[in-house]
Amino acid sequence: MATYKRRGFKPKNKAEEAQVEEQDSTTAEVFNTLDESASKTEAWVQQNQNYILGVIGAIALGVLAYLGYHQFIQKPKEATAANELFYPQQYFDQALASETEKDSLFTKALNGAEGKYGFLDIIEEYSGTKAANLAEYSAGMTYLNLQQYQEAIAHLENFSSDDAVLGAMAKGGIGDAFSQLNQTEDALDFYEKAIAHSDNEFTTPRFLYKAGVAALELDQKSKALGYFERIKEDYPKSSEGVGIDALIGLAKN
Image (cartoon, rainbow, N blue to C red; front, side, top):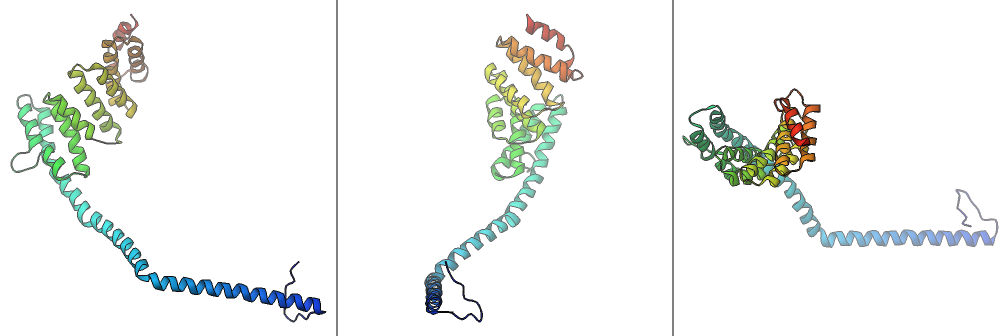
């Protein structure tokens, strides 16, 4: 067992004196080893200080570059793109309300007019911004209204959002495009994705109804019945809930 040297400690005999000397020698060796390690570390640092400083500098420059890009490039780009999006969105909204100029207004929304960008320009010029992402959605819906279904699918698939309504509308819009292309199985798949995206009073009964109708077309009556009954139970006051009993009866036959 080790003997620890206390202040004022005097060995009582030669055995204790030898043990104390051995302990002092061991302690000295430990400190010598630590000193040698420290010296080697210092030497290594001195030899490699340029490399170390280079790595630290590269990391610092990377952080500063990221902060600078975000502050001085990305943020202004986002703001400019959002301002540009205002103009084609106006044409899109006017087209939805118009009875006589829908196609021309939708075309202006896509391609721009009066020196202003359209959705397609924003997607190209401001790639990576939130405005460009929203432009993908609006372009997809515009093409859907223009009955250009493949283009509608392409743009709506490029759109990404966790928003309860927009995310579901995009998936449902793809379902509508597939339905118009007589690809009913694909349409049903995307209607179901729209239903799964979120549960809300606006999109859920809408796509439950469309999914039920698509399932009926595919002779999947039990699946259709489930969708129609969910409308009756969960959304009886929705526009889709009106007359739902007739569809439930059709699915049961």
